[in-house]
Image 1 (tube, rainbow, N blue to C red):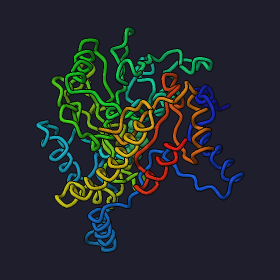
Image 2 (tube, rainbow, N blue to C red):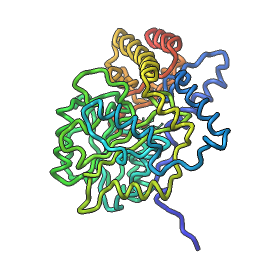
Image 3 (spheres, rainbow, N blue to C red):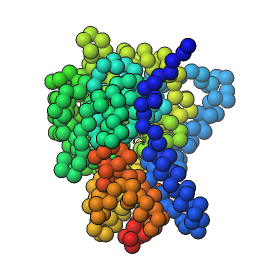
Length: 404
Ligand SMILES: Cc1ncc(COP(=O)(O)O)c(C=O)c1O
C-alpha cells in the first residue's frame, strides 16, 4: 500500500492569490460596470524587448535546419549564456564567478524550491517575516518545518525574523541558531534593501555559525542606490557560505518565457563535499535544461542593445513605483519600498487589518492589491502594491486611492 507525502497535508489551505482572485471575481460579477485595476500580482506587463524577440526568432530558425538544430541542452546550461552571466552580472561588479559555478534553470521559483533537495531534513531554516511564501512551503513539503500553528500563522520548527517598521523592514540576526538562512534583497514583499555593510554582517554570522545563506536576488535590476549590493558575493567570505538565485523574470520580462540561474561557488563546502557537486548531480538527474531558444533570448539581454532596452523597461516600472510612492505619501499614508524594488509597502490606515483594507480598496477605489498578512504574521496591518501595471492604470488607480 503506497503512502503519500503527508507533509503536504500540513500546508495551510487557500493560497493568497487564489483568495484574492475569488474576491475580485465575485466583486466583478456583482458590479459588471466597474473598471477594476490590479496592482496586486507581481507579474510584468510590458512585452519582451525587441532584442529578445529577434534572438528568439533566429533561434527558432536554427531549430529548423539539421546543421543548426539543438536537442538536449548541456546540464549546466549553454556556455554562451553562462559566460555572459559571469562577465556582465559578476565580473563587471568585481566578482569572479567561474562558469561551472552557474547553473541555468527555468526560474528562481523552481530553484528556490528545489535547492532544499541537497540539504538534510534535519536543518533548521530561518526566514524573514513577511516572506515570499515559496521558501517556507517547499521546506514544509520536505518535512523540515514542524507543524503549522494556525492561530499564530507560523510553523513550529521555523525561525522567523520579523521585518517591521522598527527594523526598517530588514531582518535582525536571530537569537536561535539556524542552519539555512533565506534572504531576499531587494525584498518581496516589502521592497526593502540592506546596505553592503549590513549584508556583510549576515555573511560573517553565517560563516561563524556554519550556516548557509540562500540569497534570492530576483529583483537585482531594480537597485538604484549606490550602497546596495547587487550580488551577495560583493561581501567578503560570501563564496564560502552563500548560494545566489537569479531570475530573468523581472529584469527582462521572462515571467512567461521562463529562465533563471543559481550560483554555487566551489568554495562552499560541507566538510570535503562541495554543494556545487551536489547541485550538479541534482540538476543533471532531475532537470533536462531550459530550452535553447530561451537561453538564446536570455543571452540577448547582455548585449549593449539588450541592456539598453531592458533598462528602459525597468525605468518604466520604477516610474510607476515613484507615482505610487509619491501619491500615497501625498494622501498621508506611511510608505516604504519602491526605491530599489518594484514593490510599495504601505501601512493600512486607521489600524485596519490587511484584508479589511483589501476590501475597502476593491469596493471603494476598484483597485486590487495584496494583503500584507498573506506573507506572514508581521505583514498584518500592511499592504503591497506593485509597479508592474501600465503607466495609465497606475495613474488612474492612484487617483482613486487618493480620493478615498
Ligand atoms: C522573491 C522572488 N523570488 C523568485 C520569484 C520567481 O521568479 P521566477 O519567475 O524566476 O520563477 C519571485 C516571483 O515573484 C519572487 O518574488
